[in-house]
Length: 221
Image 1: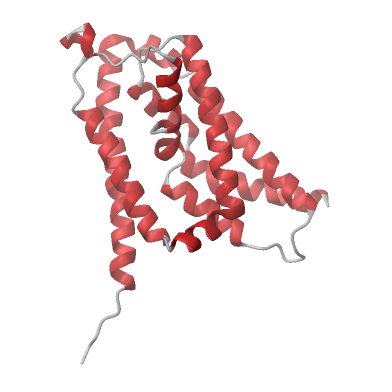
Image 2: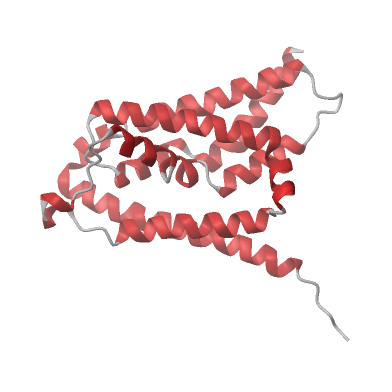
């Protein structure tokens, strides 16, 4: 039983951690919201981790059924998610620098605004994007050899908790990078990570388009 529990935890963590990549996600969040306070960043980290847990749990448990119900394929999910990620990266690339004026710096001042940003785009699709969702759906559709048992459910829960705690810690303490980099360094990092976000979105979009093109039957006479 302990062996099955450990296998399930390792399967969830090893399958999703490299795709979610909490350290890189934290730097992306820092580049998108570099001027919020420590208290706001702590609240943001808590909400992103909770949202990520809910999305991953839903993807593992009912994700395949939801996509089937709406007739959505994984390639289409990748195309839509890639477009959203690419648009977010492009908008961040075109954002004015902080030196252009204090009014140009996006500072969420209300809890409602911060909560909205915590779900979209910071949780979906920046933290848990189409890649993580598709992997979670694939893991959820794989049945254990001896059938689903309570030990597997416990292992999935612990694996998701480990992932979400790592997301929380990385996002929570991302502000330390801002202090180390300084104003100029933060602006440079924002542009670099904006370009990375844009490239990731284009890559996800291309994967989806390639799968859709490959699924089209060729009528060779």
